[in-house]
Length: 223
Image (cartoon, rainbow, N blue to C red; front, top):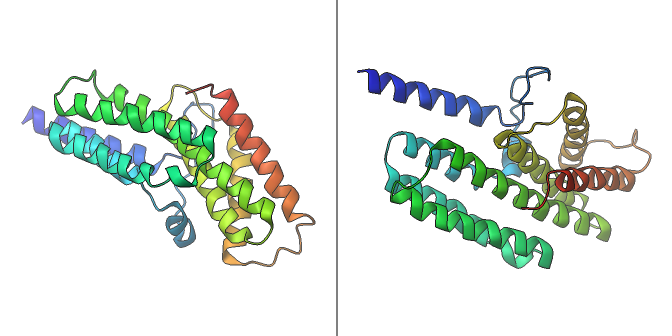
């Protein structure tokens, strides 16, 4: 009975963590309820996050084989991104893919130190995915003929940056969260094809967003 209660409690905790990925980690930082949006859900695609979340749940259930399978499902999604990455991003993605593949093998054999190992490897994957999508967004925006697709990739980059921070030992400050939220709203307005007359220079906002997110990636250090 005690084991069942602990398992259910752990599942509830992971569910809360998953739904609140975009919230700051420290007590000093303001927390807001997770935002739901049809636009955002379609843009994020939620993979490989869905697979990684299911891997965590399966691990808590001590279904190590299923947990490993879900990790590899996430890896399969990441592999599909490789042809669209430039050399630097491809190298980071491939490194994360290799790490996760080895990690899945250890999970299947129950040779991991616990949930903190999931956090560690998934945080690194989030950083690699952020770098990939910010590169795509910057490239597409630079071409100037598909701001909607650039905005989609910008939203994904913001999501994975926040996810990576949430799983690491550091967190975004309230100011950094507010800045990312500003760029997130900007991207969603472009996707919805809102009137952008109040924004004097859309290209400049894109450029500012790219500078901010790339700076955050640098501050997080090399993977």
